[in-house]
Amino acid sequence: MRNRAIAIGLMLAVLGAAAVQATEIYKWVDEEGNVHFGDRPDGEDVEQLKIESRPTDPARVQAESQAVLQGRARAAAAKAEAAAEQPTAEQQREEAAEREKKCTAYKTQLQSYVNNRRLYRMGNDGEREYLSDEEINQTRELAAKRVEEFCN
Image 1 (cartoon, one colour):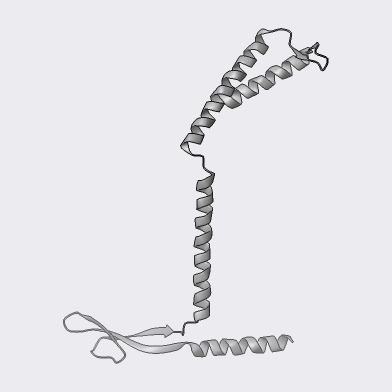
Image 2 (cartoon, one colour):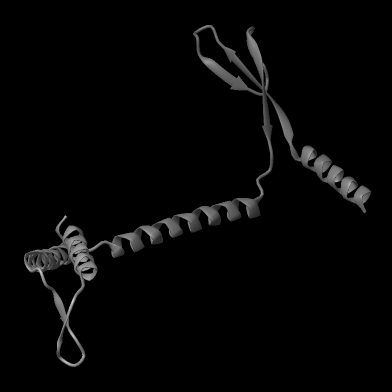
């Protein structure tokens, strides 16, 4: 099986090499300094150029072109999606106003927590439940984090 694969590979390589055509092209400069190219040398200072050409595979060209077009379409779609996700100026103003409102409310809340020595929460029965010193510190830290988050 392996020998067969090697034989097929060699045959494809030989066929591919046969498809390459070499054409003799010559380059020379005439007495007036003009550069000329041709398939028959003409002049004294002639240089032979080696040019190889292969037939174009239309299926390969089509596949490459489709791949490029698909890549461009994906890039355009991604760009459009990113643009759609960006907030408009009106949305940005609304968000800024909301942040300012929350900042003011959280600053007021923090100031209240700092000024009052005893903090409480309302229980399910409507009675005040006073917080322990540890709970007061946690509540003040949480309020300070909110102020930092919305005011900076």
